[in-house]
Image 1 (tube, one colour):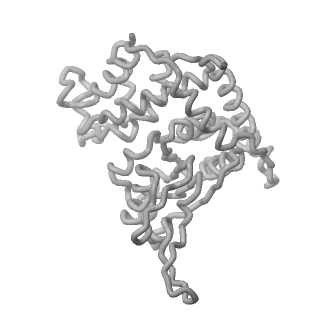
Image 2 (cartoon, rainbow, N blue to C red):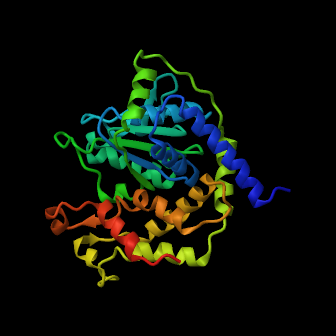
Image 3 (cartoon, rainbow, N blue to C red):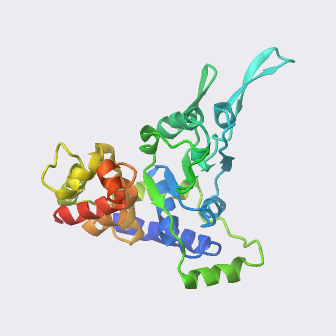
Amino acid sequence: MKTVNDKVIEGYSIINRCKDEIAKRIIGQNKMVSSMLMGLITGGHVLIEGVPGLAKTLAVKTLSEVLNVSFKRIQFTPDLLPADLTGTMIYRQESGKFIPRKGPVFSNIVLADEINRAPAKVQSALLEAMEERQVTIGDETFKLKSPFFVLATQNPIEHEGTYPLPEAQLDRFILKLAVGYPDKDEEVEIVQRMGDETDIPVSKVINSTHIDSLKQTARSITIDSRVESYIVSMAASSRPRQNGKADFIRYIEFGASPRASIYLHRCSKVNALFSGRDYVIPEDVKSVAHEVLRHRIILNYEAESEGLTTDDIINEILKYVQVP
């Protein structure tokens, strides 16, 4: 019978095979690739934010090709309707009955491209699917296949003709990634590899069974009670009513909820798995803190007037909370 450590070693090997395959197309952006895999293993969803041309969509499509699961891409536009995502009832003349026609959300991996370009009623159509793993069409409710993983992209610099995601929907994403530019050496390699527009093939290395196994392995990873207390302290220190001592608290309108603590707990375990360990250390928590908390801490006008970002406040939280 395999021990936890044996399962971790096996899972570590599977993850590295997946990363190596994705690296055939995606140069650099290691944090983005790791975070997408982290979202998949934790069973959460991932919001990817970055300017155009940083391979956000390509990375998601490549991930879907490496996984032996179904994939659908939905281009969000202002004229999109909720039924375009979830599906609708259609009339069959030969039988005289209405039957459901399922939409693209009935896939294992769903790419919601430029999610902030569709109005709120379309964005909210994803809420039931993301949280409940089910979709209601007419009078019928359908369970979604497992795994079900939503990756959404948005452009941070374009505001005209966009609809910002409401806080309730932002909270449904386990991670929010801020994708930056590659360095010069990486960009030279990107130009050399992709300049001729050649289609670089990738192999399928992970299936649903592997994903279920990785999820079970991540859940079995040990986390000490002191590290759990560290996680809760980190989330609690962002709440103005619970923390009146730290100087940075005056910049926070609303702090992170207990859901943030839960997601920090889950992601820290997966980060330990990425390092081939069967136990969590404080550095695992620090490594995932920005992605988990970035969209859950709401800053006030004072922070905006001083040019502070949520990442700046998270840096202060990491300094403020005592490491066990």
